[in-house]
Image (cartoon, rainbow, N blue to C red):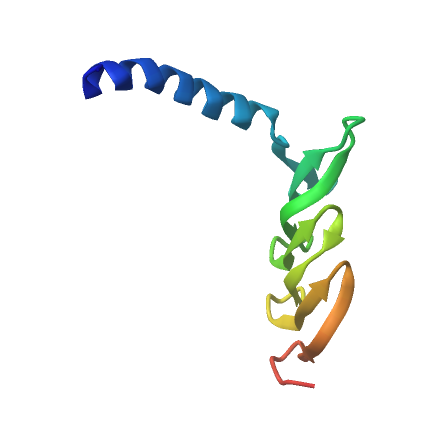
Length: 119
């Protein structure tokens, strides 16, 4: 019977190969950024490439107002809004917050005035 050390020397390379192969075959996530004409950030989105190499929103999304304050934060799944999204006024105060399911608003949404008072 082979010793545990010999067994690991035989199995370990194959296990590492299987892990690397699985990682290489999965969807490739990338981050894309868009910018305003002045060069400031407009949006940063995580995407995956479909079969034709077209980027599909899939993962975290952050958008900024032209003044640099956050405008929207949320998550996409296969090109559709999914989970909690927070939208902000240009002054940085929250404007709306709620949940999406399959790209459609779901449940209770909360809205605020630019001064921070709930609507």
